[in-house]
Length: 285
Image 1 (cartoon, one colour):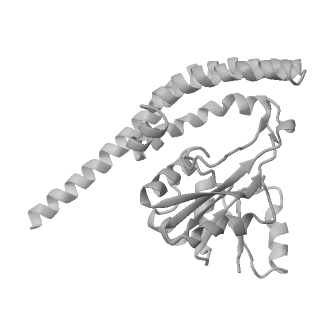
Image 2 (image 1 turned 120 degrees about the vertical axis):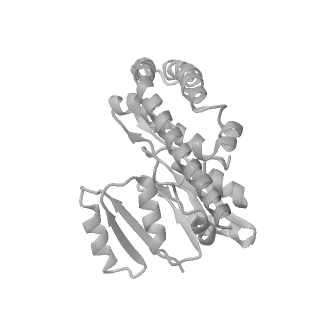
Image 3 (image 1 turned 60 degrees about the horizontal axis):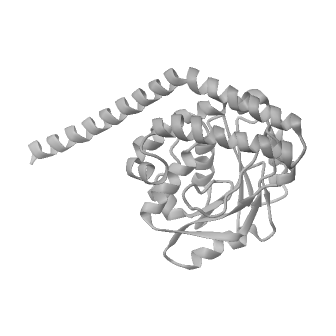
């Protein structure tokens, strides 16, 4: 048995009304409506009303195979398993410089929540997804790293999700780099894991991995569009995006600096609060 929980997070296109009507026909379908709060808050809201032993997540722009849920839950037959990542693929022929898509083939370091499941008790022990991330970026990585420190995580390649390329505007693709503000909170919450799996610091991630390495990858992608797909328009858009992101990475430096200071001040306050509690406890003793 299973239940389906649909969380409408700030929906304005009438999807909530359609789901509400379906709930009248299907007893295992439930609807949660929220003001826009982001993916972490939406997932946590759905998890709070779920009644099952396992929590499986996917997104509204994904297509699940018929065997998806069964194959995703299968690894939990191992009592030590507390989390599972399925295989996420896309349609390569439909990719363009102005689409968003996801692919994941079992690194277990990100566990994108378009295709992941967790044992409920482990999810609750970790407090769910951190809702303090300012953008829909890195909250799933943060949870994956914390989950791996708690117990065994498995990969289920037959639990297949297709994430079709989704059209996006040039402006949105160019402004993606603003999401990198989330790197500072991810680092503050998981410093050792961040250094091990990503880079020595968020600044290295932003201004070496993204500014240099990723943009050079864009150059190769532009050549691929030109040589392999004979699409000079795609090649030109890719190069334009590369320069637009370079510009945004430069002009967003003050925003990144504020994000770093904000996170550092919060961490310092939290550390001081913990120290104060220890001192008070000792004095009471």
